[in-house]
Amino acid sequence: MAQVKFHVHDYTITILGETIPLLRKEYELFHFLYENNLRPFTREKLLDAVWPTSAPSDRTVDDHIYRLRKKLAKWKDSISIDTIKGYGYQLTINDEGQASPFEKDDEFFSTGARADSKVSFIRPRVCPPILT
Image (cartoon, rainbow, N blue to C red; front, side, top):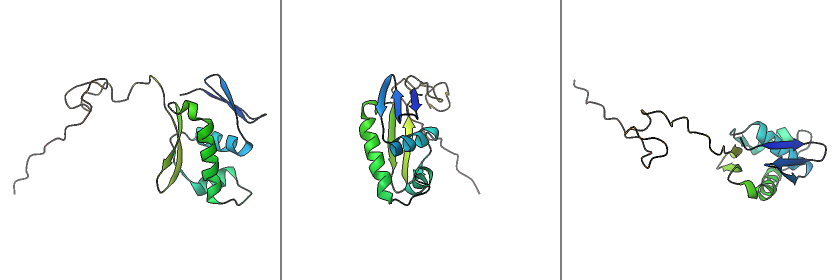
């Protein structure tokens, strides 16, 4: 996982050795998403998690996500905040160099090809017809 260090005393994060200053709520939102990597959240759930005692609009989440994306743009290949259309957002942390869980699974690759080959699709199995 991309190494991220959180510094709550000054609301900064360090990614791969570089420190990024965040606003307090940006920090809290990013920390919440980081702790729940790959888990999608609705705007309402994010509001409840990061703004529990206030009642901001849904647009508040969108604005904070926008600002976080701008600040994290340099690391977009490693860390991204993805929009789940019609639902909300999720943080995705891409592991560079991590092997696919299917890499050694010959059944997954219909030709026995590996993940690094050009053949990376599954051929559908044909079932025999049911005779009645």
